[in-house]
Image (cartoon, rainbow, N blue to C red; front, side, top):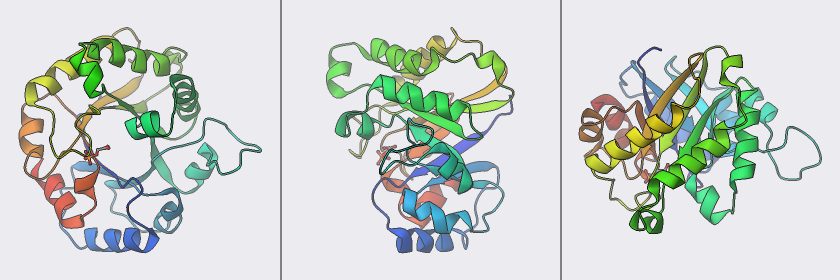
Length: 250
Ligand code: PGA
């Protein structure tokens, strides 16, 4: 598996389409480290104009979500085919905001994971414990359950060179401005590595990211102290200069 470093922007429900186009225009004027795989995840509706943008070869598009249904009478849903059609290469699945605020359950997340595995898109599966779960000492159980319910039904040996990203995102750190400390990240990344040892991922390229209050002041030290493959970034990805500065530091 090639060593890669990812910087993924999760714009959540922040930038409208004009702002998204403006961001991309500004980002394209900045010098970016070409060795980093940069993924931009705008809102669904902003994917359409951005799909026609002439990105540098290290920049690609992802969606923030995808339907757990393939096609059909599901009003308001966006299918895997629709995001493939808009040149997405990635989709975020199981973000904690969807799990906690939009009531997404493991079953739905596992259906999405399966659909994405059987498409040209690569999944970015988000996992992470809440503050209460951390306090109760159940982080390992939570991560095990979240990963197993997505991975359980997949025969990974049937895939050839599929790229899969797992983003470890402690819920208590997301959007708080306080990133998890290095030891916590290291311990939980190691837990994740242990959990996925139960699967034969030899035919796949699996990368592990960290997300949760990553910014231009902490990115470098988080990365240099951990065996990580990059970041999933929320707030600090909303400003092209800040996002570029993270890309260029790591
Ligand atoms: P944050 O969000 O960087 O604003 O903490 C990360 C995420 O939700 O993926």
